[in-house]
Length: 442
Image 1: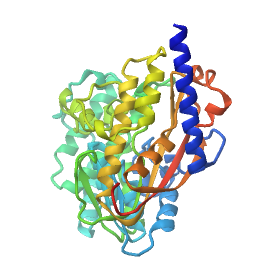
Image 2: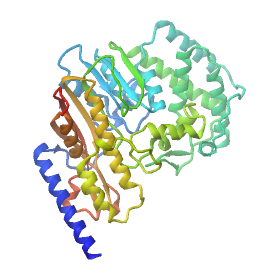
Image 3: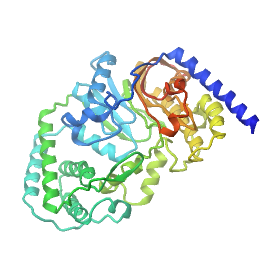
Image 4: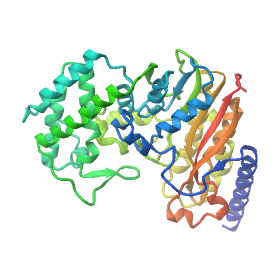
């Protein structure tokens, strides 16, 4: 036992020494306090037309995207790309600035929201939507023809609200015009957390301390109408000068963009054990993106390995990180972890990140700038310094690391924070890695 402890101590020293060397090389700098009021937080988006159509915890702010594009898009015809497209913040901001853009994701909910937000709406489409809103607003009840039988989702609503939701969804399913139907569907999805008895909390949902009032059909109808009127107002007030292409594909599979990118800004899932198929389970079922349990399995299989709630098939073994495979994994193997899947999750995560960077490099013009927002984590009393580990992986592929900018300190669980030394706490942060593609794979 003493021998194991001694060996673990030596490995930990070697890991921290490697971290220190990479810190000197990349010189991360920025905010040294814990705060959620940062440019890499979605809060600002909920105050800005179109961006506010759907609340998304994992997004970053439009001003952050705007400033990044202004700093690194050297030509007016620069092509902007977000390979983890989320709900389209990068794509929407890019086309508002006059650039063409592309988004890629495996999350059908995010792709649906992105499509609605970045679409160029014609005058006739807007008129069709307005007419349908007026018609819907005058109907005091609607026959319930849609049925969702997934019990987990049903229990997140009181019976009256659930009945109203299905009646509204039944009306939406009968709308013939696809563009109008999509706007109505998004309006309903945007209200889910407000009308549900549960709210998003960590890796899933939690029952609200103060329960919302039950929503009869007309109450929910009026909320949907108000949301739709806001959508129409935002469409009228927002000029989209560029065009955004949207691809439903995993960036872990080989792909070719129609145009190579000059600027990339993205935020992959963090290695924080959050399963987005659980966090957004209600919306995925209500939106019709999941219709059977196999759909959740398929979603997870295509996603980055970043949580412990699914066992992925082996993949991307050749793209991993030495620091993770040879130091972090052996260190954690001697610790009492809350899940035996944490070690394979971390190894899989960085192997996936290596494959993502490799595939991305083939879709970049020489000199392209890549910004990646990441969050570091802690397991078994060991900080996982994702930002500098990824920067090192990127350099091994052929990128140059220009900068690592720290946006906030992250507070891990109290059990983990009390174990960490003050020096180790320095690595628990959320950062922006800025890379430059040098044009040739190593």
